[in-house]
Length: 94
Image (cartoon, rainbow, N blue to C red):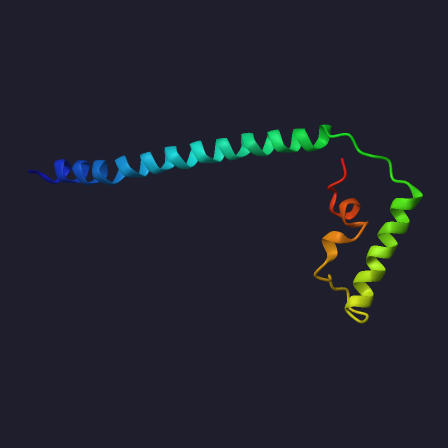
């Protein structure tokens, strides 16, 4: 075999898997961007509940609970999910 044939064979052997991996990576990226776009669209179209004064009071109590739990340092107590303001702060209120 001459030099040109060897070079072409080696390049072909290297390029075939590289092109396959590039195709898989591009397909994964496109799928990821599509799902991300759908998620952002769904989030932006979700109706927001207007904040009320009781929400602000509950949030203040939540922060106070966190501050008291950590003795001045902001920390989260273990039973935080039971706090009345948790759904408001975490955005779980629909």
